[in-house]
Length: 390
Image (cartoon, rainbow, N blue to C red; front, side, top):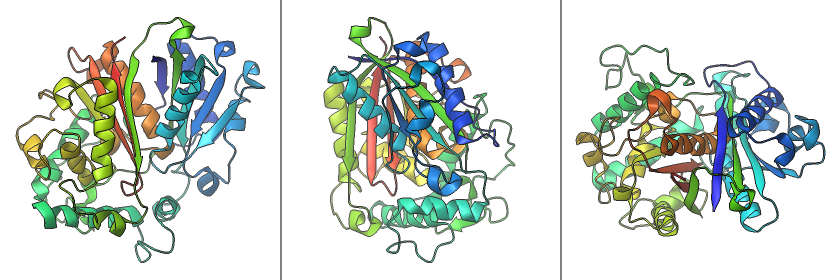
């Protein structure tokens, strides 16, 4: 079994730190939380999307070797899969541990994005779409692409913006409890989540201001270990990883009961590996919500409702913080923040905290099994983890 011995997240409301400074803080913070000496770490994996574009910096594994003298010869590598980069780093570390190559691994995800203007940042992030083949005329590529997905949801099943607004309201409300959330001190005027063009202006298509995640700087890290290391901790009991064709139009051309069959397949893979039936055996979910439509699509694919009926989970209160199956008690990407390469690692860290009863004001009572869903690009790469109490 692979265990999460401890983890750390930087303050996602903060900006101004460089890539190395964030890697340094998160890595050493995770070691302290896990009570693991630096010399016990045998391998490191880094998740990052666009260090070259935002900071002119690649080869982030080499930065890990500069953090502590014990890591001067540590094997380290970087992984990229758009917003799922952190989860790819986790999967690589798990494979190392399961193969018996090493007993203890550090996984850290990081992204620096607030050092440039919003339009430049949006163009840099557009590299995770197919350059020259989609969103070419859009100043902000990702709202445009996810607006296409929202249109397809409406065409197939119907879509009421009130349900997207409620997802935004829930996640921003949850973020107010989280001392590390980017939006923890924000205020929200009455009606700001709805269809008021002044309070909540349209960004692209059906997506409005509060439907969209913000640009975030930050890092998150976890220390993973095999049972050979002999330490207790939450267990990564299941996982799923699937990749679909890059272009939005190619993914949407598939006519199945589920909008994204590969996402549904990843969920079923995770449940099978974890030995659970589905969401009925899960206590809390941290899911990707770079846009409200992303979480909306996730709800039915994870099995909370039949295909195309995610609205039921929203209207019923199922996903509220005090509902039967809370979703994104951390605030999610919309409320907590979305430093792209860090998100998958942060999700795993929060899942481990939940099942350990260590999530503070974000704690879901009696949580024993948590699920994460991390998505890269326009739902091109999907990665999931099930985490259970150790």
